[in-house]
Length: 178
Image (cartoon, rainbow, N blue to C red; front, side, top):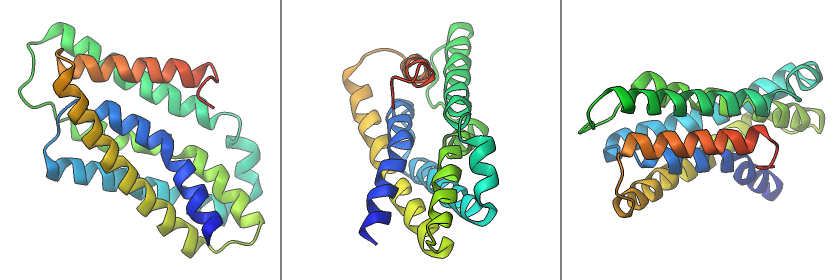
């Protein structure tokens, strides 16, 4: 059980980093909770899929999962920067399609982790909810930390988030984040 808790925490760290960057958007508490639950949902579904599908996905997705996540982060960051360049500063930046869709590519590495757990005989019905709960919690904390940091960094929240996501994507894409 402690192995699952440690692995769940480690796997939630990419979502935690992303949540800190998204926190600069200053989402309301309710929306931050919804976004954190979306992160947790995908981090629960991904290992469940990995465990159930087995080793085949490990061979197919394993080497590209990190790149897909980095591309998704970078694309959303570039979108925010382009949007900020073309528009006035938003009072409330809330794009549900992006906020709720972003966690999916970040969870692809959890498919590989789930596959490994399945090969080791772990129950999908235990690992998935543990990973989901840990990720939801760390993501919510990350959103609040990002929100607090944005109060001290006086630039547009969408620009700050866009730059943070592009930098994070670049670091992950170059393999420096692992």
